[in-house]
Image 1 (tube, rainbow, N blue to C red):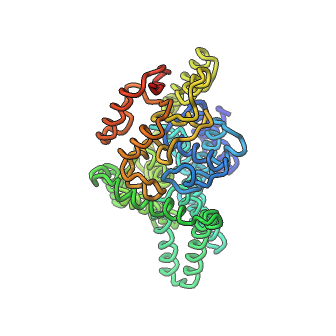
Image 2 (cartoon, rainbow, N blue to C red; image 1 turned 90 degrees about the horizontal axis):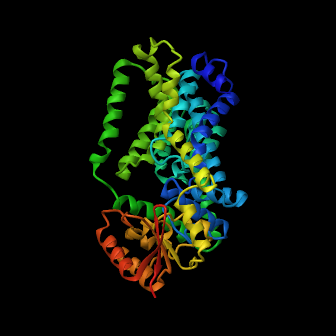
Length: 495
């Protein structure tokens, strides 16, 4: 397999078949992500999604028992995996690998449609790397789920002009937006472009039909997520959690426009260079769709007022096609002759994966298990020492609830940082009005018997000064450190 992949790197790609391309893409994805199958958590958001999915499996619609600021398809993905495979990190991360492979495969198909199979193949491999390494992307993020459906939807818009495929594309886009709401701007831009493209070709009727079918597909998926709440007599739960809460969150959590400047400046320079040198044929339908999708995603970043590392998962699969096309037309890269030692540089790129492979092997030798992290070792310690698990609060490593069959004490504690997002309290019926009131209710009324914190770390973000001062003072007065397990402190309430 490795020899075949090396041959593909250096030889012609014209005979590459779809199933072979997907197999290569999946193998690269699997190799890069495999060592992270055994870690307790990679990003705190993923842990929250798992808890939300488990709650759904237990019979509770999202936002009713636990609460988080994501649309329901994200939680449905985790609930589906848990329902079929049980509490399995391996299953969740394996299906995450399939999401990455699917996204990269349709990056390959769009690259092939826009330029060539060679462009598509390299775009796909780079896409896998960008969706896996450099940050906390080895877990399963909502953006991974979103783009696994957005990219095939975008490919159908590029590849076919038949009305049926616009409907299918709309259905895929609907799933994408119900996994990550901010992709709605890109979908809206694409919908407008569908209409514009047909009108400019004087095909009013066809444009209107295609636009309506595309929009109907999107709306059908959105309404299907609303239906369970309507049938259960609580439609306002869906409306407040899926629509109103994200709008409030964006308004309350906007950061300075200067934080967006680097990525916007880079792309402005890139596209100016592309236009000046005429490196991309934007007369092609595929290139036009890519540009429109990129503009939609950048507008979403602007409206959101922030760009976290995992937000770029939405940009990379689309942008990388144009970047590879441009690199392929630059004289330096065209004149570059393949040398076998270039493989050394290629194999050095996934250094994060190699380090994690070493960590997994070390953990197996020292502790007899491949699984590692406080989210695994802390629950194990709690069970072995018969500590209270019915009244427990994880202020760190909250995936531990999953291992102990426990639930957070309040909806806001589903993700520890949600305790400090007081602007969201009204949207899930929290009677407390401020984060301090919520903390006081948890600590002074519920009074958790066992609390887990991160050793030598602030409980909340450093910006949450009052919340950190309160929780630090309360823990010192009412709790003692029972044990330190790796980088976690296990606290027990004083009688």
